[in-house]
Structures are given as structure tokens and as C-alpha cells.
Image 1 (cartoon, helix red, strand yellow):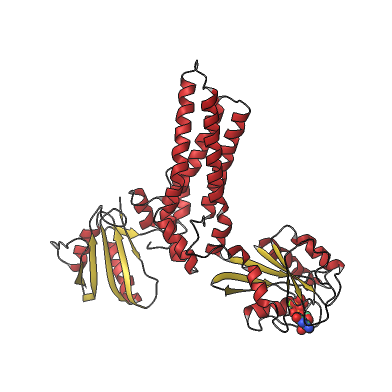
Image 2: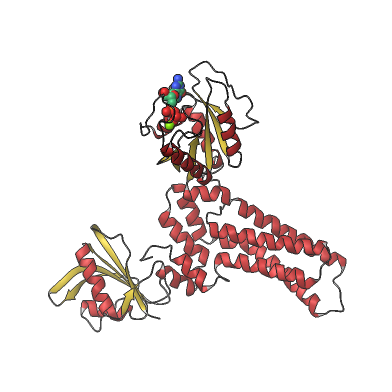
Amino acid sequence: MDTIVALSTPPGRSAIGVVRLSGPASLQILRALVQQDLFAPEPNRVVLKSLLVDEGVLDQCLVTYFQAPHSFTGEDMVEISCHGSPVVLRQLIDLIQSHEARLAEPGEFTLRSCRNGKMNLSQAEAIRDLINAQTQAAAVQATRQLSGELAQALQPSKHELIRVIVTLESAIEFVEDDLPAVQLDDIKETIDRIIADVANLAETYRAGHLLRDGLRVAIVGRPNVGKSSLFNRLLMFERAIVTDVAGTTRDSLTESISLQGIPVSLTDTAGFREAGDKIEAIGIERTRRAMADADLLVLVIDGSCSLREEDQQILEAAREHPFVVAINKTDLPQVTAGKNLNGAQVVHVSALTDEGIPQLTAAILEPFSSLDSASVGLLITDSRHHDLLIRAKNSLAAASRSMDQGAGEEIVVADLHNALRFLGAITGETTSEQILGEIFSTFCIGK
Ligand SMILES: Nc1nc2c(ncn2[C@@H]2O[C@H](COP(=O)(O)OP(=O)(O)O)[C@@H](O)[C@H]2O)c(=O)[nH]1
Ligand SMILES: [Mg+2]
């Protein structure tokens, strides 16, 4: 195994910059840096040392040696806390590379930690998510996963699955003895129970991914209903141009806001209608795209005039997405009053007077309403985990169906093995090298 080095703090000027080494040559390189062949630092103990170069002292640093296997990566490691001068740090890393070390790939320290059994894959991913967390709630979820909660949550299902596989396989081996009906019933019941557990866990992704990635909201509607005015209200500054000329907003505008601590990326779109010219046509095409990308649509209707054909068209287009209807201009005499909206969630607002804006915010955040970070259980936040849970569920469902149809044990067992493999891939037991490489390439360098 080679020795790797990386700057673990952000590049640029800072009070302190931390350089990390991991691998068998770490201690030997540290000795070269302090120019003491016999330097024998006590493991896990911080010492003040001068790093020397030909011209004299490069920097005075705090140096910590971690002896294998008692380190983050499970290998010999050295952490050097220098003064955060980009010049010193650059020179130090160059110097270390001139000894037997190479620059670490993104996430390579954590990858080594996984390989050496210090943590499982979902814990490694939790470290990445913790570093990238945009909100406190997302950070809480990442720390839970880091402590191994996801692996624990999967453990009972995996155990039961293995038990069922073993029973079925022994039945296959002793061909003469068909499994008694009671035992088959028991197996079928167990499989269905595992399906329910896996499905419940997968279901938490709806909320979990929003916690991690935030919510993409697009404001849509026909021209002049007050989309840009509402956009500005929610942003709390006059970002978009508002006029009484239909077709004022020709391009989509996106801004990031925090609504009650939840990251929301809010898009104001060009009004939906027959385009008047080329530019507007492009704008409307972008509106379609913004609608397709959004987690939630706020569909704005002008309450002061009757529902038009264009409103109906947008309502139809929105049906495929979660959406909230905002009936705007409540300060004017109301005509629409939420007629013909087929039971959609409706909020009455006025972008002019701010009436109903808190209710609109609440409606936007509705998917988060059950997410009080203190009381909420473990959530699936990663699309990879969600995907694997769905695949496991589908394989289990196929096994269950085969049993209903009285198919042979071999067929049932094959699907159960697939399910087990998918569950194992979440924690990395059955993850291929190629997938591992892809996952770790999303990490920061130096972690
Ligand atoms: N009375 C009233 N007028 C509004 C309200 N919201 C927007 N308007 C007006 O409606 C017109 C169109 O607004 P705008 O935000 O540009 O609509 P958009 O085309 O949907 O983006 C402007 O003249 C706004 O001042 C409201 O709540 N009440
Ligand atoms: Mg507009």
C-alpha cells in the first residue's frame, strides 16, 4: 500500500492548515521533515516540532502520529497542523511528495478506512454528507448514519432473509423431502414482513432527500397572475421585474432561500401561454423544464378574474407533480374562489398586502412538517440507498409471488439472494470496486 498526502483544510489563507498522511511511510516521512532519523513520537500525542528545509525552518507545527491500526484509516497516519499560509502548505505538500508519498484521491482516506474495516460504506457516505450538510437537520441525519444506525436498521431483515435462504436451500439439497405446508407458510410470512420493513425504510427517502438536498419549487401560471410578485415576496426583496404587461418575465429566475431553516431553491417562470415571439417561446420552453425539475409547483391563479382556458391547461400540466394552488390578489373582489380545482390544496394570498404568505410558506414546507429533527427517526437521505432498497423490495416481491404460484424453491432462492445482495450493497459488503470508486469520487480531497 502506498502512502498518501492531502491538505485536509480548505485551500487559501487560514489560521491553521492541516496536512494529513496515511500509509506505511508516514512516520519515516515525518522523520525526514523534522530531520531526526530517530524521532519516535508517542502515538496520539500532539507535539510541537520545527519542519526543516535547506533554507532553515519551514514552519513550526503541531504534529500528531497515529499508529496502525489505531487511526482513522487503520494505517500509520501523521497529521501536521501548520500555519495556514498557502505558500507554506504548498511547499510542505511538495516536499512530502518528493519522499515516498503521492497526492490522495478524493475520499481516499475514508476509502482506506472502509477497506480496513474501520467503518462500513454507509458510514463513510455519512461523513461526506455531514461535511456537505446545508442545514442542522441534515447534519443530524448524517451523524445518525455515521454512528451505524442504517446498518443496524437493516440487520434484522438481513438475518431473517439469511434464515429463510438457509431453510430453502437445505430443502433443495434433500430433494425427497418437500417442505411441509406450515413451514412454507412461515417462510412466506417472513418474506412479506421483510418486504414491509424494507418498504417503510425506503419510504423515508421522500422526506430524507429533501432534508439533504433541499426543495426545488417552481412558481407557474399564466401571465399577469402575480408570479413574480409572489416570488419577490417569498424572497423578501424585489428580485424579479413586475409590471402589468403580460409576458414581462421572459426567462426563468432561480434564487436560493431558507424557509424556516429548510433550503429552498425558488424559480420564477415565464407565464404559460401561446408565445408572442421567439424569446418568449424559449422562456416558455424553460418553464416546462423548470416544472419537470421541480419537487413542488406553486400554481398561481388570479382570484380577481374568472378561471381561463390557460389556467386549466396549467392545472392539467401540473397534475403530474405535487402542487399547491395559490389564488392571488385577495385584496381585490374575488371571482374564482377556488372553483373547479378538483380538490387541490388551495391557499388564498395577496402579493400586494402579504395576506396568506405565511400559509403559503407552510404549504410549501408541508413535506417537512413531520421532520422535527429531534423526534424524527432514521431517514434514508441517499439516492443510492433508496435505489438499492427498492431493488431489494422488488426481488423480495418476486420471491413472494413465486411462492404464491407454487414455484420451485430454486426460483424463490435466486430472488432472495438478489435481495440480500442489494441490502448488502448499502453497507458495502457486496459493492463492486467500480461502484466504490464512483462513490468515493464524490468526496472532498483530504477526507
Ligand atoms: N391587486 C393586486 N395586484 C397584484 C397582486 N400581485 C400582483 N399584482 C399585479 O399584477 C400584475 C402582474 O404581476 P406580476 O408579478 O408581474 O405577474 P406575473 O406575470 O405572473 O409574473 C402587476 O401589475 C402586479 O402589480 C396582488 O396580490 N394584488
Ligand atoms: Mg413574471
